Image (cartoon, rainbow, N blue to C red; front, side):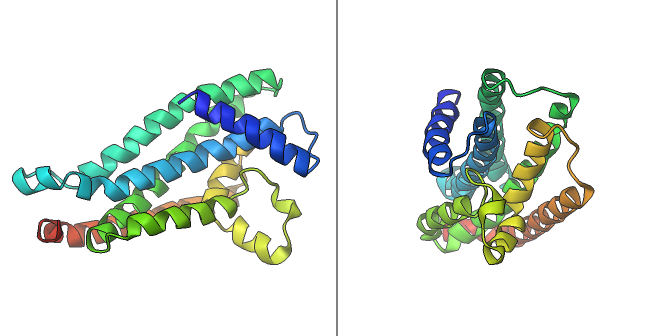
Length: 222
């Protein structure tokens, strides 16, 4: 939990710092903010997606509220991500990045990431019960999502046609809010927060609606 983000950050900093000629001493913090949020989203949604099928035996034998299975996977990933924040603090100290009171606002992007991941995870857990190959296709989707999220590159280097897509990526919004709080020492713009809240609300509403509508049919498909 601690070494993986640190080692990934070192590799990405060396590779992309060299390729892009980025000499910013705080570039490792920039990368790690993005990497932590993306890794949490990927881990949480992958776990939630497989939660129903993995616990098929229990679901068939004992009545348990089914939403607890994807929720538990998201919470497990959340604990790991919070532990990984120790790595972020270490990098902040090593790079001598100033620490201000805005760092405490990091709780908001964490909450946004949790809500969005849970919403998407609920949707995926419903889909994969019927379409089992979704668990293989989703790895391709998350890879594409990684490259559409400015984890290791600045949005300013992208052509306008691509930048529009990246700026409206929900993960981009969450990552940028975290960077505002940790790296830029500012409160994130209201428009950025509002757009993120809308994405989270849509994901949660759609996820809860699909899950509630389909949960009674799970036992027939497992």
